Amino acid sequence: MRYLPLTDTDRADMLQRIGVAAIDDLFVDIPEDVRLKDLVDLPKAAGEMSVERQMSKMAAKNVAAGSVPFFVGAGAYRHHVPATVDHLIQRSEFLTAYTPYQPEISQGTLQTLFEFQTQVAGLTGMDVANASMYDGSTATAEAVLMAHRLTRRKKAVLSGGLHPQYREVVRNLSDMAGDDLVCLAPDPAGTEAILDEIDNDTSCVVVQTPSFYGQLTDLTAIAEKAHAHKALLIAVVTEIVSLGALQPPGAMGADIVVAEGQSIGNSLNFGGPYVGLFATRQNFVRQMPGRLAGLTTDAEGRRGYVLTLSTREQHIRREKATSNICTNSGLCALAFTIHMTLLGAAGLKRLAMLNHQSAVKLADALAGVPGVEVLNESFFNEFTIRTPKPASDVIEALAEKDVLGGVPVSRLEPDDDDLANLIVVAATEINSDDDRQAYAEALTEVLA
Image (cartoon, rainbow, N blue to C red; front, side, top):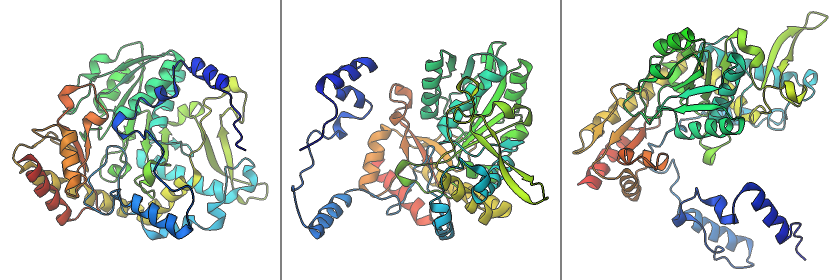
């Protein structure tokens, strides 16, 4: 007998409470043509080997990222992760460790968090970093809330170069809090007049570099204008490898730096879990969300690690908490720390240069395809191209030729017809000359 705890009345009450008419209304963001209308055609019972064969046959319809030339980025990147990382994080003391609710007996966990924080602070050019957050998008939204607390203002200005999904996460939290949000129009060329939007009501300015479209931005002038109006600059980095080659945001005047750390130590993982990075200046640390591990000595002078700040509602009164957000899956932060340790400063710089060189070669190859325009004058490992046909059609046609050619901007900005022919293309150290040549040849055939 099946156990169904909810009655039809329960479901109707819940739908009414959240303001939708039917269950299907919760799935409106999923395109109609990819929704499953009926149950999958599977036998009700079968032997194990038969099930394995059936499932393998179904799985073979997917195109795995590593099976064809892969140029998809836009916030999540395919890099080489050394086997050493996976080997070390699977040690039982790491793999089974949970969040340090009793920190004094979790010295190993606290030490790895301390080292993680040290690496993040160094990468971003900031004074202090927390023990990680869910991902880059939620870290960005938390940074905006933190800026509101620090400035006692409620207006945030979001650059048009910010990742559209990051913008929507910020919008969601801002709507819930009744805060003001100024979202600039999508900015593929990096020419928006963001300085004009900063005034004495502004709490913070949020700028991503490299932008969603790959454009590099000098944050110095934005920081100066923001500080002149006692506002804060929040810098967003979705490709953390870029900081191996670019000036850290802290050196350009950023007050809070948030980033997605997936590129270091973590593979794509079908979309997660990822690792959000959060760093700020020392004088803002008490408004920082999440928690902070510190290094100290005990009464006998021995080195020890402690949780020095935990302003979450699990630790202090709810009305005093900066956030309810927790540390991300700690294993992701550990993978980041191990990979960063293996790379070292010289290794990270070399990795960054390999990425940039790969992207430059690809941009040169695609620029030679008739009808294709590369929009960026400067970029790291990602850039935007304009094609003479709708980008979504081009990407589908490329996939049929076994090339995953990037992300059509229309997939994330469906309401802007001016962006319909733009594709965000990423190249990393995994791409070979053969991959780049295959992309250029396939694109030439698709656009012919």
